[in-house]
Amino acid sequence: MAYLAVLFAVPLYFGGVFLLWTGITGITPPGLEVMGVWRILFGVFGGFLLAVGGWFGREIAEAIFGQRPIRRGSERGELLIAPRAIRELIAGLLQRELGIKRPKVEISDDSEALRVHIGLHLPLEEDLPGITERIRALVTTEVERRIGIAVSSVDIAVHGISHRGPEGERGESGGEAEQAVPPS
Image 1: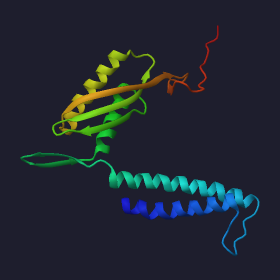
Image 2 (image 1 turned 180 degrees about the vertical axis):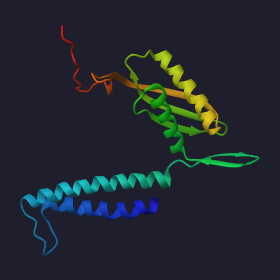
Image 3 (image 1 turned 60 degrees about the vertical axis):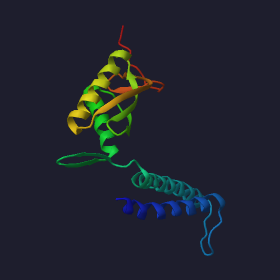
Image 4 (image 1 turned 120 degrees about the vertical axis):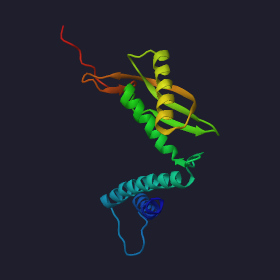
């Protein structure tokens, strides 16, 4: 997978640099005339290619330099599990069981157990002590039950408040969401 990302990232990134440079400066190789609207299009398309190449580059860096698999051995064999899989499991549990949208989950492995750090937006209708205890209990029991790796601590950082919009979906505070006002 990382090799495929490299094959796409490098040409996209350098193609984006070339097109952005051409669009901004108008300096082109001999025989290539770029004028007017084409310069703008080259610049926009070059910026797009740079963004896509940067995304592929981030995927490559995570694959190559990301966290090493978590290893646990037993008499029946060795378990190797990617930290990304554990993060996705925890995020899915929080979304499905508690309705928390887009939690940011990070994990670190000490020799015996995992440390979990969760960043989230607190649901408006929830009390902080109640939901944090439910999160800690859910993460601790479900990770131990499903993966077999103990969780030593669950750190929670509340970054904001989320609320329900008029159709019942969640929105995050600070946005320009309109609230329906019932007729009087």
